[in-house]
Amino acid sequence: MICDQLKNAAFYEPTHPRLKKAFEYLQKTDFTKVAEGKYEIDGQNIFAIVQEYMTKLPAEGRWEAHRRYMDIQYVVTGEELIGYASPDSMKPGEYNDEKDIVFLEGEGTMIPVPEGTFMLLAPQDVHKPQIAINKPQQVKKVVVKVKM
Image (cartoon, rainbow, N blue to C red; front, side, top):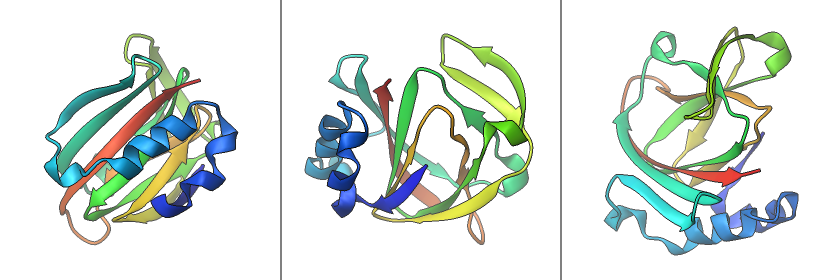
């Protein structure tokens, strides 16, 4: 798991060959003018999901992980907490191959992710997104899925 400002994305591009293209998309796109939805960047290798939602109370959130995709979760407006945990400390549920997601149960650390910040989550990084910091608020976020 990496949490940093988008301006520092170049430091992390060597981690995976597709990250440069994913970060370029985030840096060059004015998301204030992009509607919610799914946007292909490089077919199914890299795509973005633009979301707008109210953050949730911690008890309403769910721990999740993926197997085939890495997430870059970039907060465009607002702020939220994203939980982080090791899979060793969690009890996994049933993996949904079609959606590349498994929900888990357990405890982890909550990390504030303010506007202009991204969290890079590898498949082994269990995470709990969309959590309110003090009270629920409106957030616009882009999740770029990068195939491993």
